[in-house]
Image 1: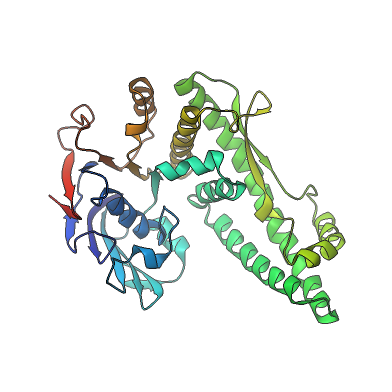
Image 2 (image 1 turned 30 degrees about the horizontal axis):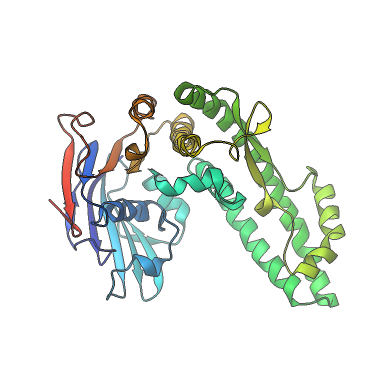
Amino acid sequence: MRFAALRTAAFRNLADLEVNTQAKDVFLVGENGQGKTNFLEALYFCSYASSFRGVRDTELVRIGEKDCSASVGITGSLHDRVLVKFEDGKKSIRIDGKRTDDRKELLAVAPCIVFCHEDMEFVSGPPERRRWFFDQSQSLYDPVYLEDLQKYRKLLKTRNAVLKAGRDRADTLILDTLDPQMAEYGLRLMEKRGEAARRFSELFGPLYEEVSGIGAVSVRYAPSWKETAFEGVTAFLRERREGDMAMGVSLSGPHRDRYVFSCRGAEFAGKASTGQRRLLALLLRIAQARRYSDTTGKNPVLLLDDVLLELDPEKRRKFLSVMPEYDQAFYTFLPEERIEGYGKADTLIYRVSGGNLT
């Protein structure tokens, strides 16, 4: 699958036009602040209906405008076009002109994987960023996991609202109904997360050693619930209910799970240098892409935002040598970078200035 063209309207600083992207490799060259990353963000918006920089939808709208949209033409797929709009404060998704409210459908149409500076948070940021990464990785190839995750989050939101409300008998009865459902969907997530982390680690460890020379690096899944049986989890939730009510929030569950990077059994990320953490984040994305391809038999589109700039020549060479298979890749470069060594005969190169691409 490839993005054949991107059309945007009032999206960030990008000009309102359609840009041909019908090539396996597309280079975006320009100074900072000219629209290179915004272009990648528009493509990502068409894949996930959200920003990879974690900003609100209102921040995607060009200053002075109220609404924005991005749409892509697609080749090599059962679908031809995706349109995502933010209009009148609401978001809408259309696939081949048909509206859908299910992001699982969108994710199946145009899967892409982004490499960006914010990925460092998967290594050195809070636990929720690592959960987000591994949830996204699994959602790319397991729509049932994504559905269970969405159901669990809805239950969690309801449970937290009840915990904040009070302690009367009605609240207790509601929690008696919610907790078994929390246990059911939570245990489903735990089972899949444990297996996925094990398989991911088997792929990631050798990859990190190949590029960095540091062996025995692994990813370990650490669930919040130590119980693995339904009865045990429901009993645990009842036992901890008073504490949850006192805090007004659910203090345990998959929303509190952790993923730990370790080297020979010792925690690794906190002791790693900035360069090692940066490489760790980049290789997480490569492992994510490889895992997707191994599981689905398909290759993703890659979006690489200034990632080569932050590597020394030797690590850059090694990084490129382990690049995953892909159907299409978009790279951003500064004007002073020597891009001749990366392009091919059919590479499409755009100069980006003031939101315009030429």
